[in-house]
Amino acid sequence: MKKHNFSAGPSILSQEVIEKAADGVIQINNSSLSLLEISHRSKDFVEIMEKARSLSLKLLNLENKGYKALFLQGGASMQFLMTAYNFLENKAGYLNTGTWSTKAIKEAKLFGEVIELGSSSDQNFNYIPKNYKIDKSLDYIHITTNNTIYGTQIKKIPKTIVPIISDMSSDIFSRNIDFSKFALIYAGAQKNMGPAGTTLVVVKENLLERVKRKIPSMLNYKLHIEKDSMFNTPPVFSVYTCMLNLEWLEKKGGIKSIEKENESKAKIIYDEIDSNELFKGFAAAEDRSIMNATFNLKNIDHKEIFDEMCLNANISGLNGHRSVGGYRASIYNAMDISSVKILVEVMNELKNKV
Image (cartoon, rainbow, N blue to C red; front, top):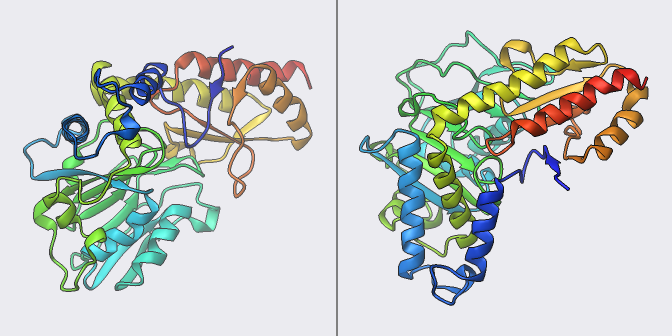
């Protein structure tokens, strides 16, 4: 029986990708060996890593534009530290739009002065700050394009000559924007790309080596580039599954094609939230994410009934983050529109139950 998986992360993958990944665990490339037991220096895995890196640049339309793609160990939280280590010499500006940007700010303050360009903490991060000023003397600015917990998303990338670093963990490869506006993009795999264990970093190479401090080898982007993202043993299964997922996305028509699907899914669920008198959206309408729709019941007494209806409809992973409460429907690339329609049917049917 099909489960409708709205988990915020680790999150849904297409059945095609899961089956191919499972096949690779049993045997990779007719070698009679599992992906999990071959050397990361073997021809088979080197080809996997190179394809994952090249597909990343191709899908982001960053080929031959001076960018390098890396698949590094761990989650995006390490990049809070690593980006500042490599880029922060004097002062940086951070747009504070939620839990993850707050944590990024904390790490950056270890290396230099950090200013908040704007913050939406006054409304529990339910909107994106706008009309903030960017000092041209900043080493870089940092933004989080999509806020998984709160269901907000930056719609307009700032116009500035200052390098932009972006955490795109929960909306990477989901919408078509000019990715060449960024000095560095990072994204933990488990939101919209693959299983947990690796983080994609896409960096403009000529912007590196601007800080005077010595950078430890494991935290040095330049060294990882020189070693072709193989400085140490990579998380082989996560990288392999990311590669399969990028192949799947390319076959579907790339980012432009998937963006249309994502917008259609988001419209269906937001239309129901706005038209159903039992629910209310959490995020400001103009800043709503097409990846994570957050909403609450107006009457908490209806929670038990709604939760039971969701369970009976095989809806999984819908609970909101503890800091927001309510519900969060994560509708990442692999989420089929039929699952969104099932959720909306349950939301609509609640009116007949209360």
